[in-house]
Length: 568
Image: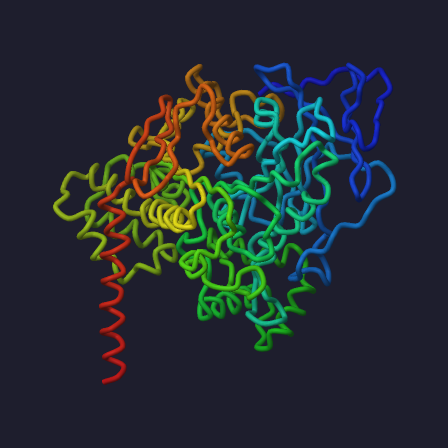
């Protein structure tokens, strides 16, 4: 990947506070900006295929470092600073096991900076068109990264191409992860949901400061993928985020994602496991929290290393979330904002199986019935909530299939439906019933970049759409996520950036030169996104009917049988 191009800075910057947020000199390449907390010195980036440069500001604190007494506490506003703060270096990511980042880099052959980790991690990165003025009030797009709430960071993404091509402000935020982000004792000593509260704090900071960057605080769109998409979906339901954003986009993740929230019993198990692993195996929750506040970052990270990729879910805390998400959705209690929701057509096709150490040989040779059972066991806790219904699922999806390749493909369709497609369809249906516009998509393109990296049967895997939304082929700095894209793929990038930015501007993705994207209404039309766009209707209708009708009926029967057994 070519490095960013920097020009010699040889003239004085002219900064007119309150009027122009960038310098006026033609060769000025070190943007200076004032916020309510202090001045920031950024850097200028080039973007391939356009003359529009982008001003980037990295590592902006939106909260105090959540350390010491602020560990396992809600975020607090940042401290102001007096001198000009350098905003040209990537901030550390929140505490996490870096092997997940390394695995992602290996699986996708992506290039991005080597980043450190720290508990002091509540920072955001901002990308703005270089010539933007404060009174331009550009749409603001706030990205929330995924990673199962246990890994990820702002600086593994680059918002420069999206900002340059679509004339929008892109903000990429970080939030506490794993134990530090979601540990909860279920009482006043540690309510939990710290990572979600960090997201709220970032949105509050944006409301107060984004005008200084040329953004419109009354036109903020939150968007994210996987756990980031689920975070977006939860922010749409949280009373704390009311008025902090105005449109929402969830990619391959919603609040109804299985295991996104823990029951009281599951929370007790998680608390005991983490407390024991950190050497705080006490019985009193106040003592556990105080003990864990005394631990070093390394000691807090220890549970990550022993738990592997295990989601530490959120809780219904009565603060960030008042009820189960499904209850809020059923009561039409979501914030009244336009919503864009979607999935990829092979969500569990590659990254998830490989991350769970399912061998390429097993995937290449297809599945017999024994392989199905072995793979199901490898998914372990991720399938715990439906473990009692696996025979029913096998009967619906896998009965009478003998061909090992069809069995493999259908098995992963079943998992994709469970984890991603059905929760997304449910969420779209609930929001549609509020009367506000909803748009739905299925991303279907397998990037040419993966030609030699994945087996031929894999289509559009989990996360594959992200590189197109962020204009991967046009990035010219430290990140390379699509290798050498074809001309058609570059056009697809421009199309997707345009759809997403149009939605951020108006709440409607449609615009000149784009294939029509119908509203998701009672007809359940959606857009099939690939090199050529097509309109689909009732995505996987028969399979969705199974999840919406047959499975609940079976659950009710089993619940009734258990109740009768208890009464006897």
